[in-house]
Length: 182
Image (cartoon, rainbow, N blue to C red; front, side, top):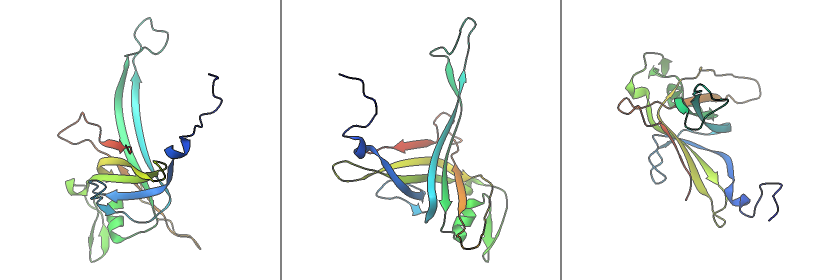
């Protein structure tokens, strides 16, 4: 068999992730998706940053199998919100609260964390149907800079980055998951 010069196969069109997806707060499952965050513009991003330590024993001329260790895991989900509501603003500013529709800041407490935030995307194929791919961050808190830019003849887009946090009762289980359709 000759060596392929590209990765395209007859199954390739059935394995594409398409469109912007939708972001849900307090995700449970497809039958009970939680609360839709709102309309977005410019797409949404799930990011998994894992810092892996390369341990170099004396005598090694390069990386050694088995001598790698995960030092840090930071999972996040960034939504570019076009639909801006008072509730979305409260989620976007950790520790904030509203009294008579005036939002102010305060300390972060456990109630500010969101159990699961999910980005639900679409995988093509599967005999002409589509199925969801679901990227989840757990114990999520927005911790990016709050910036709301307004410009002429354009719509404001609020960038909200939900960062996953380990559970205080389980520091070993990484607080993220990706559910790929069967």
